[in-house]
Image 1 (cartoon, helix red, strand yellow):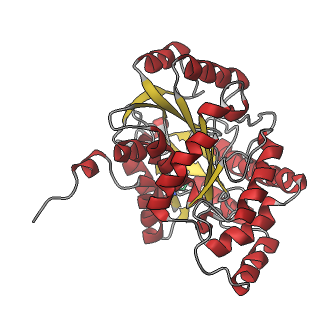
Image 2: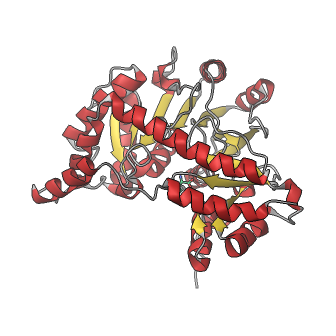
Length: 384
Ligand code: GLN
């Protein structure tokens, strides 16, 4: 038999999705793979039904339905503070997963170096490897997840073509400050590199933190590929609607990559999503209040158990320190936790390039009842 591609030797299957299978297999409450167990806004579901009756069954324009791109340009203009041309600055993709792969393939040649902060969402490793690029990891050091500016500079000095920035960050819950983003942008400009963002948690930020789009900083729009999606903002992870926003020149390249990767995102869902993109500011304020409450419910249980954690500033994940359990490793601990305690988490080591295995990740994008049920189970971990 011929052998399959060697590229595949360099990364494993998704540990996040494996933990979902473990969780399903033992009937645990799944706080591993991050997706909501509550419905999207009813208006949006109604719009999807309407779109199916209105004949949107064939391909949309490859880089996105014109109505969707117009609504997205308007919404992002409000939030990013950047005037966007729906035809020149946007490609609509199948989720931000495709957006990031498209972004990476658009800017990188095989052998190019790409800076990735570690810990990182597992896709970035696979994206670089499938593109033929070489990751340079810069640690975000627990428990505060700050980076060393000198180390970041050294990474740029190695000739990085791009930097991947997940902000707000999965799995750390870090929201990069204006000072940090300014430092990153100054280095990107000095060393003439691109920044590829993953900003899917742009609207899930806890006070007093504030999400700043790096593309909005001076000199950055031309060198930033801003990737995001509607998945988390509108609780529609299964709709697979994402996008890349960038300069006309970059988007010209991204359109080609996207066209041959997937042709396009689901046409009726793009039409329906125009409704969501038109939601007023109150929707986003309510979303923030909702997630703040969910975060507080879950963190209260961690406090009761006495588990140390880093307080999330954004996104819906929390990294918890399991050092006190003397577990042999975090993967075994997570399997035990799912099977014996009935709550599934993701082993932190799957996010780190460095040998860190004292952390596990929970997500709290769940109804309060679900979080209370999980919390009650976790109380069994309480000592003495
Ligand atoms: N982004 C989510 C997480 O980190 C979902 C991952 C996925 O399965 N696509 O858990």
